Amino acid sequence: MPSYSHPLAWLLGLEGAALLRAQAGDLGDAAYVERRIAEIRALVTDPGPALNAGTTLGHATTEEGYAQWAAHYDSDGNPLIAAEEPLVQGILAALPPGRALDAACGTGRHAAFLAGLGHEVVGVDTSAQMLAKARPKVPGGEFHQADLHDLPAAPGSFDVVVCALALTHQPTLGPALAELARVVRPGGHVVLSDVHPLSLYLGGVPTVAGRDGVRTMTAGRFLASDYITAIHEAGLRILSCHEPRWGRTPGGHGGPLAQERCPEAAAAAYEDTPALIIWHLQRPTWTLRP
Image 1: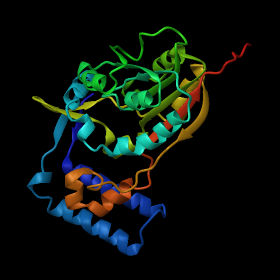
Image 2: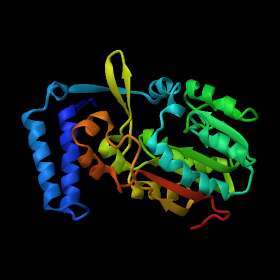
Image 3: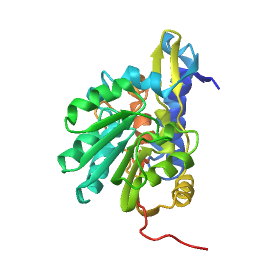
Image 4: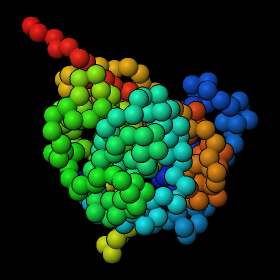
């Protein structure tokens, strides 16, 4: 279903989120609230030409989106990746070397880290353009163009499976989790990271530009309970769950327009709210019987 984007609505949404956090007692005093109200009044009464026109956004597939992003994905300074990597790599660094799968490997950032830890690495992704970036990072690795629902691997063939920032593009979690559980050996580990649903509501739904305008990619609003259900149905057990929060980021939150018109509200809307959800799972060595 197409969505509608309006720059003035985006800024007013940030102002509203900042006011809700103030109302909840997270931040701000009377003067802070008055600044927000004054800023809202100014935005509404004199928005300027840059804020006057909205647009309907179409839909882009993940193949289209990542084909476009591949050339600059590693150089974008993505604050989501900056928040994700320390936790994911900390989990991986504590595991013994073995055979590792980077599922939806993208440009191979985790595949390269796993290879550096001494793992035999296999990478899988649907995007040929992203795989072309990944292969040179892991010269001894094995890479395949394939889907998360149909991994080119035998059951129980990996000691470690990583799937980073990809499950949000799935319509449901169950099939992908079941496939990840299928290819990890009993006693093996699965590490997942994804965009937190609260970040998606704060503008984190990915968009790509095309000849027909800006389009959004699928971004499922999966709650922790959705993950827990899918994890248990896949026969995996939870070792840990992390929800790293947004801190301050270079250039500020919300993009150039927010930084120009309402930087204080943008900071309040984002900072100290969860950016990601990260899971460390294990396939048990035993099976429950009824």
